[in-house]
Length: 338
Image (cartoon, rainbow, N blue to C red; front, side):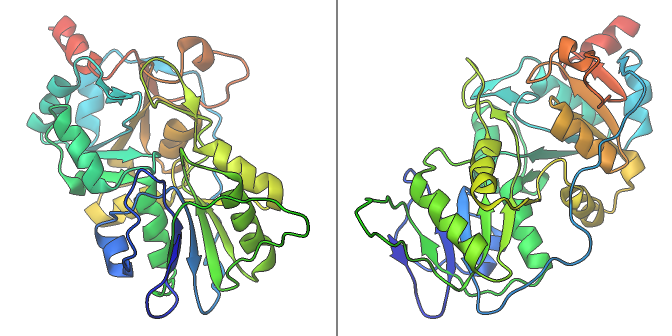
């Protein structure tokens, strides 16, 4: 159901599991609290904006083979901040990975700043805060940065207009001679993970990108798979982005990992030197590349997507500084060294 109030508003495809009451969502609410998860959205504007500066395409970094983590204290003492991915590092699906609470407590006790960055755009910061709490972890909303937040922060950084409209789930009933209308004022299409992705959304987004002059195509991430449960891998946000890319033949602007946008934002927000950051993640093509593109130290954990065989494959050109089995090795390796 399309809902507009007053002037043109943000137009958002919102999954049916989220409330879609006909209320206006102001830009201030979107940017400050981000209560709407970023699934598939198109933004209505009265004027067009091009990209400022360079694009955020990732740069492949080829490095020497990764070292297995051994001297934990050296790594911990060499950085001020640990940026941690969530899926595959902190949890898998809704199951907490063993040893995480103790490890986070240990790092905090040493005065380290912890920041949690995820490419999963289905939850707001507040919703992620609830998930951390449910799993028994004390993490503030200010420490959580999802790719939905990155998309909103990017639009704010280019002074995207405040006017917007919100859109719920729709479906297409094809009939002879059917012509699908679309809003000619839409100036940006943002695509993220969406469990209710459908042909209507593909076609609507395609029309906006192809026919609206200057319309931006923004992707929260291009992850091939995600962990909806701890039983298996599921098709990730990249599959939705790929559908729009396939129909438009337009490369998206990626604001989540491995784009440097989020790293630059975090560095500026907290006043951290990037050389004083260690990125911890389970994916080579997003987490580790994110850290390397940002000039940080990198640690791969094998508790998620990447296996040791994948890391050591001759076809893999992305090598972290260190790798280990799981984040709780910080504690077990320290104990073994005593």
